Image (cartoon, rainbow, N blue to C red; front, side):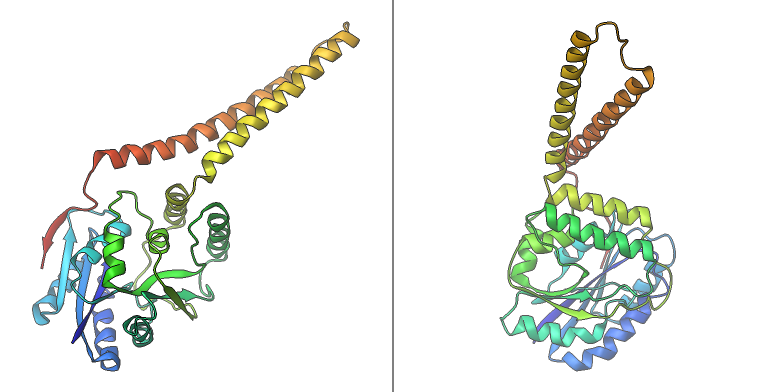
Length: 309
């Protein structure tokens, strides 16, 4: 029998660990021709998440886990799960059941047929989410697809079933700064997305804050687009042209009206602040790219494991 490995990142999800397991076991009858393997990746939880995971592992030999020494982030958890999974096919799912288990049979049929290397899930709506978060999410997809050569499907979830070949390709990308949505697209292969309506969490609260999502989005821009660097170059050229035009105007004015005083101090302050702001923005963008290079050059591990089973 072929084996399906489920990679399930968890962080402070003590209320959903067992609910997820029961839901998948119930759904397993619809794809019983596959053996099922669970990989819970604990991203440094501070509640009783690991206690719940260890209870499942004690009663089911197909439940495995990796517990991090601290919180390394969901990207590191995804990498660890893919690295440990031993299945012929590998699925990535969130433990809160916002990724519908009932989609797995169709996903598996798509990849096992050989027609697709990955079948993922794409939300067609964001019902139940804050309006501001939904608006920024749509804006992010529009901007990154306009700026990057790597197309990222709007509304795409991490939830997907992949072939072993595709997972091996993803694992070969051992960069420290990871943005999985971009990596899944960058490796290529034949990919398909199934649409579904947004679902609420089955229990607990999300660990993603607005600022956390914003920081994650910025990481996506830095990892998969050079457009911010191009923008910095255009800002420099634009400010230089403005300064050149201003100098010409001042020179001509001084010749025609030599008795006229120079522009007022308020205008000078505004110009200095504008140029200073553009310089700080440019330095900040450059600094973000350089900081990524700095982190990559350290060759630190993507995660540190405290215990595994």
